[in-house]
Image (cartoon, rainbow, N blue to C red):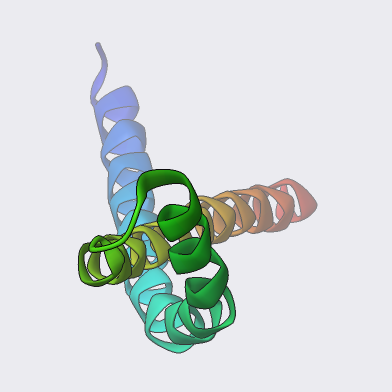
Length: 98
């Protein structure tokens, strides 16, 4: 492997790690803003569904678990979307200048 190839790969590695870090940071912000509305709009239905199908007494456990699920859903969907958008945007900018 030549020195130029190593330098090029190092530049791509730095870019990708920066994109990943930015995507994670933005995903945390989106999760902070987006998870509570998702939780508040769906928790009544989820608890009703749990009570109807599994019986009474699971409401508190269901509320906690659903909160974790909402946070994970918003985080991972936003991270995947943001990282894809950043990579595609970076490639579009790079191809425009090349």
